[in-house]
Figure 1 (cartoon, one colour):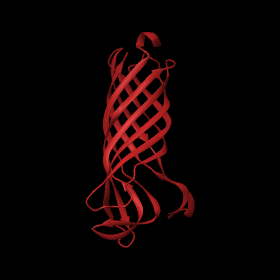
Figure 2: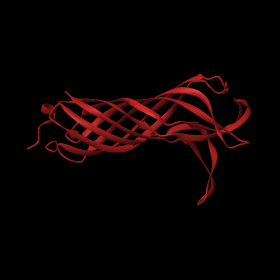
Figure 3: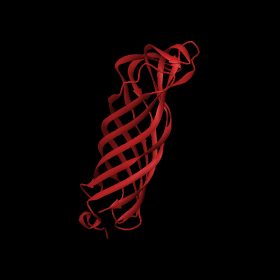
Figure 4: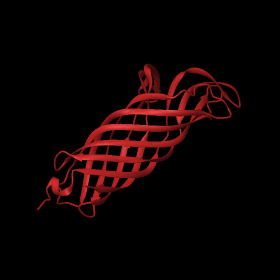
Length: 206
């Protein structure tokens, strides 16, 4: 027999740590400095340790509203159009804020509860120059969204574990850009900074 939502606790806080992949997007050709003067056509955020927290509120036995904060202490690299090689451009502390929900497939009588999740939000980059002196180091805030899923395992009514996998795109450019694919040819599409996030944490429910 399942335990009522009120008996379980309405709120969950899950501090987490994990790994976020790299991602890149094309930009208008910009001057930069990478040891020597270079022209760059792509920016890439480098993979990094990811940490933060989920905050969940039980709307029903299977559905939760969710807020996620995720941080990377990472850096950006730029691609030299003459060599097609990346060089480190600037450091960045990236904060991702997401507001959404998740649906758990099994009832509260189960300790192991897989789920799917989706959200909308924004990403903020706090950028700082390094000795190579890349020109584009202004802070940036852009629209972002996420979709993914995972599993929760409850040890008891108040403590559990969670593993979560997300696809976390952020707008790289508000204008359309050209993309070429070996299968579909060249086409015009919005430029996103596409990253994957893999985290695990401890659930505290109250």
